Image (tube, rainbow, N blue to C red; front, top):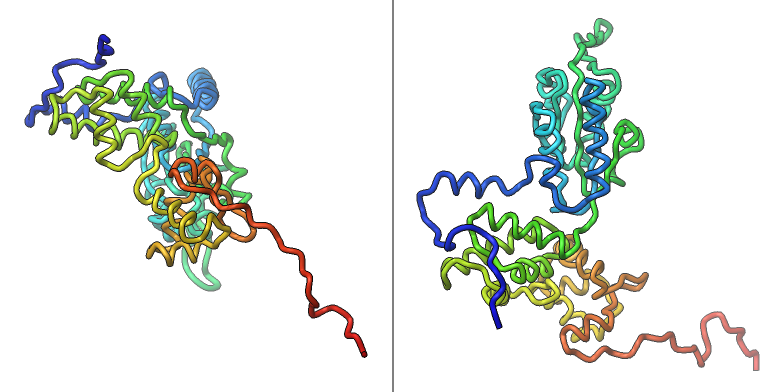
Length: 358
């Protein structure tokens, strides 16, 4: 049976001192909107906003991107300035502890420039309120003096575009959310979209890859480009170390098996979670604290790193009584699924039964 064609230039041999290749390694992010794979509806709306911005010759409206980690919020935040050939300043919510931390970004903003605040939901309330007038009226109030002599000097700002990125839009206050003219939610990618991303990035890395291998990596990447890129890097290293540098389907499977990534994209920690839930707690329901104590891990680690994908992939469900393993989890691990828990009817006397005087 003929082997599938390999996508990508060169033989896959990795040379150490290649400045051009190092630059490609650092340039995996798309630079322009046409290079973005997936998120079609978001891309179409942003293209309209960009076209309007060019024709009206005014800055774009403030934009808020929300969604799970690794789906491209930062990518969009860098693509938009590139499209308009405009400068961009980058900071994050936790770095802005007081209004004075934000003031240099606002006063240095040029006409039509961008300010990107990552994890904007972690911005303190006092800083958030300080930015309101900057977003609406392009001016900031600077307090001068103290006590009875205190007054506010208003400083006019150049018109700029604020881009906010958050994994928890619900933690933003209503007034802050309402000041963004565009609110875009990023969703998970299909395996086919991720396969295109893997193939394109492999080509940027001068690493030959079979289409079937790109799809195999994509299927095990949880619908997230960041994870797909990380697993591409690992497959590339494995291919360079153990083979001729080309990522074939067999090489991709061997690399992922060594990394303990199974066909469903579960890693060792995920499987240990399911094995504990099924083997120790009989499939549940049980609380996350009990699971964490049994696995000798922090409950936050399970809640933030392990459970989100297991819930989305329907390996577990949350109930008021705790976590419950699904038949899909038992089937994936080849373990028997315990019978469902039923509430037994109370047959004996209860606390609230009337007392028989006899």
